[in-house]
Each structure stands twice: as C-alpha cells, then as structure tokens.
Length: 639
Image: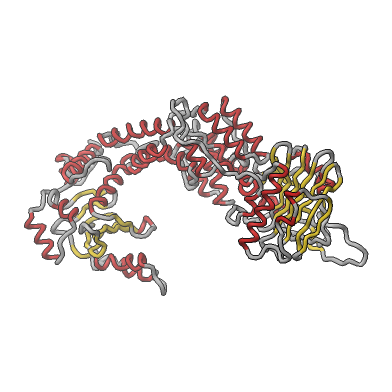
C-alpha cells in the first residue's frame, strides 16, 4: 500500500499482516505469538467493542483522537509496529506515561536559561503523553493530548536513545502507523540471505513505479520522477534513493550517497567524482566518512576513489564522456577556461540529447560537477534546465525554455551591491586584439609573465600572500584573466584596493601595441575611504586620454569622448552624495564604458568560477629621493 492509496484501517492492517507473514522463513524459530500471527496472517487482535473504547476514555478522562479510536475498532493493539516496537497498546494497556521513562528529567537537564518552545515540548510530552509502547527495543511512543489539530487528532512522538536525535513528531496516529509500515519495508528490503525474497503487491507496485520514474526522468519530467522515487525510497526499494540522489545533486544538494550506485563499477566513473568532490569540500582532510561511504566497494573502485580525491584536491581532475557529448564537454571546458561560462553551458546543453547513460540506473551526466572548470557552471536553475531536457535516447522537447541569465551584459553588475563578491572597489585592464594567455607579456615582468592554473580568486590570493612582500610603492595586482568580448581580453582584480592618485601609474599604455587598452579603477561607494574613480585609454603604446575623480575633484588629460566625459557623471564638486547616488553614478560610468568599447566582464566566472591568474607589474611609480616606506612580508607553512 502506498500513500496514494485511499486509507482505511482494515485493508491497510490486513495487507501489512500478510506482507509480514510472507517475509518469515519456514524453518525459522518464532515466538508462539508470532507463529500464531504468521499462521493467521494477522498482526493485530480482535476489534475493541465500543464499550471497551468508552471505558478507556473514562479511565483517561479524555476522548481519544479519531485515528487511534478508529484503529482500536479494527484491532485492539498491534504486534511489530515497524522494527523496534514489538507490541503497541490496545484498550487495556494504554496509560498516561507520567515520565515513567525518565525522559522529561533527562531533557530538562539540557535546558538553558532561555529554552525554545521545542525544547520545552521535549520535556513536557513525557509527563503528559499517553503511552502506546508496551514492548519495544528502547523505543518510546506517546500521544500528546496538548498537541491537537482542528480535527481532534493528537500528535504522536517517538524517541529511541540509539537514534541520537530529538523526538520524532507525527501529526496523528494514522501517519505514525503508515511510517511504521514503511520502516518494516525498509528493514525487510535490506535483510541478508536466509529469509524469503521480499516480494509482495506493495514492492511490485513500487518497483514498477521506479522503472517508470527512470523513463520520466530521462524524458525531462524530473519533478514527477523525483516524487515517485522519494515515495519508493521511503519503503527501501532498491535503486530508488540512488536514482533520486542524481536528481538532487543537479539541484544543488551535496549531502548525498547515491546508495550503492557510486560503488558499482558501471557507474563509478560518473557518480564517484561528485561524491568525492563533495567530501573534499566539506570534510577537508578527514577521510573517515569517505571510507564509510565506500564500504563494500571492490578494490578497484576504492583505488579509483582515492585517485579522484587526490585529483580533486589538486585541481587536476578533468571530466570526460564518450561520444559527441564528450566532445562538447571538451569544447565547454575551453570556453570556461577563459570566462565564457554562459557559452560553455550552452555547448553542454545543446549536446545533452546526445548523452547516453552508462546503464539502467544512470539518469544524467554528473561527473562534470567535480571538474574545476565545469563544476562552477552548475546553478540550481541550470540543474533544472538540464533535468528538463530529454536525453539518453528519450524523445521529446525540453520541458524548460532553457533560458539562463547567469551573466548580465556589460560592466554595470560591478555597481550592484547584491552582486556576488560585493565589489565596492575593483580594478581591471581591457586589452584589444590580444588573447588572454598573452596578457602576462603585456602586464607583468619576469616570473609574473606567465599564467597560473585556473583557480578561484580566493585560492589565488591565499597562495599569493605566501612569502610575498608589500610596500606603498609595490602595488602589483593579482588578476584573473579571460575574454571580455569580441577581440577583447580582461585582467581583473577584485581585492578592493585603494587608489593613491599621487602614486598611481596607469598600465594602459604598456598593455597595448596595435590595439587599445582600457584601465578602470572604481571605488565610488566608499568601501575603502573616500570615493574615487579612474579611467584611462591608450592605443599603440601611448595614452589617449584619462580622468581621475578623487578628493572631490576631477583631473583629466587628452581628448575624452563626449559619452565618457566625467562632467556627465560628476555634476557637482561634492560628487555623488550618499550610497544610492554613488551606485547610480558608478553604474552610469560602467554602462558608458561598456557601450563605448563593446566589452563585458563575466560575472559568474569572476565570482564563482576558476580562471587563470597572473601578477602584474606595480601600478605605482617608484619611490623618489627622501621618500620612506614600510615593507611587510608574509610567511607561513604549507598548511
């Protein structure tokens, strides 16, 4: 019986009893009561007459909740409610608990001076609850007469010390019993050899639903598939949780095990990478939980898992797939490498209908989420789009329009306080006619004239501090590089530096040979002292024009185009006053620059992705005679 079946006590209890009887072996040793229940195919007792129910209510001084009352009218008690309650109370056994377990006193010890309502509830239910457990494995079950819904149902609370959790709440007795039926199924489904094969009308119905859900998921109807798989998983049906975890991972969940599928040699190449990557992200160097998740795996799978873990931690893991989809993956990685995460995503999505599963229990490509370049492409929105796209040979049109607006056009997102990274100050160089990999030769000297491997800006800054010296006359920028539009490349530093106008030397002229170079340094929102903004443009190694707004003044050189004239943006000596005006001015400036040069910066790649980085030459002039300065050096070990 599933939750979709209309509920009545008689058919539900008789079906449960038959399933329980059939699950017992013929040669097993059973208690006399169990042997009788097995022979009669009935876990219950004779129905309680109305007089017995009324007598219990008189003894308790309360009318019983409807679902428990209706249950008693079908069976006056119950054996084997789930796996840990051997006998559930009928009319003669039900009684007020009165903290016979001592749980109220125990939970009271944990109360602080300002307990929450839930903590007070955990103390009180054992004093006022109606005890239903008669025989159990250290499991307590009570009906709470003070937790009553509009239909008169009392909530059920259970607690077992070995579960190491707060009391579990069920809204009524019928819901509790249906969960006990599911618990019975979950435990029987995992019973080792020696017992009869656990097959009955419920398991056949659920297994057929799992098979149907797999086709629904491959056809793009992931929501209906997830509901069906979750329902089957609650009954412990094989494959259901592992299939459902694949859907949940693409929606952003990371606390997943994929059941036994991740350790199946057929699926390990796709399911082990996300499992290992999520472990590395959350467990750091403690690998005990990974060992637990690999229990039962072959030696080859364990070796693969540890190889993947080393690759993920070192940033060298690269996802591969067979056929045309794998070719698209390679193209997408190259796009993501230089910041075109939207293009990379579209490449993979366009090829998704060509993807083929590794076996019947594989719903979607998953290994790519562990790839250091491709993994950051995943957002919950994109996960839904992927899951809505038919694949694996299933016909149909995508159930989503595929729209994804992760990256806004232009530059103005830098002025949005809600944008990831909160860039109240930033600086970047845009160079025309130069590929990103050639930027170090334009912006750096010596050892800095080479790109480091792709990493997040946080990782890059953490590495760059080790053994580095800083002074007021040494303002080298750690920049992420990529493509900024047709024929443009960018070098971006979002570490919120402070502009010092008297020391600043624009890198624009040195960055360009034949084409143009644009330098922007913004900080109008006061995140680092007084507002400032700088723009300089060069061509062929010579500066064309520039302006700097700082200390309430605008200083300019060269012939500035009308659309970029600072007089359009700084209309008073005070400049932008207040946060809202500063944001408006900054946005207008960035929009004008984007329009003038036809450029953009990829927000997703800069704030959430991994990009190649390099360290530029200093953005400040050398010290002059008699100028003193302090040098700071950072030193620490590898950990």
